[in-house]
Image (cartoon, rainbow, N blue to C red; front, side, top):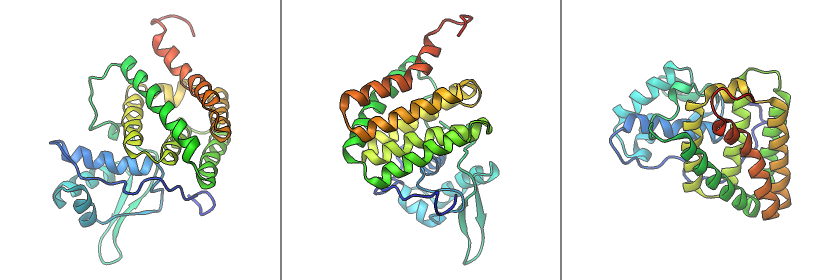
Length: 247
């Protein structure tokens, strides 16, 4: 990510939070992938040290090491030893195998989509109220990169698509809603991997993101609600369509 591409997007006072629960290694992976997918850290950026991550997350250093080992084996981060060492982000394209590890695997797809609609709409409304020019610049860049990657591999397109939603959440300045959005989007990505990387119509996706960004800039709640409705409708219609019915 170049200097021109990496536009500061404030919004999360603290992206890493103490972990509660028993699946601590997976929670550590989830929080690191959240920080990367949300654009807080991009390729080439240095993550906090192992000791700092352990302190922020409230877990042992050994748990962080195991989580980082999984991320390193997947090529998401690299580790360097010595005084100048640390953790460096290598890619923003997180493998599906590392997504949704800490979420409920038994959530029904219609329930996930229903939750996503409620969360995305509220985030969009808050974004329109609270976004700065830097926030809008960051979202604009994601839409442009999405448009430019029309013929790129599906993973790259998915990155810019989802980054737009994460940036909208950051601009909303609601950390709880943003993390809820992250968990829903990760679970949907796992369940509907082919849809996000192969089945979406690129031009439709680009147009819907552009429409959503324009609505956020206008700040009219009714316009925003209509844009979000149109934005989420294609996936919802796909899920509602009976198996075997032509698209």
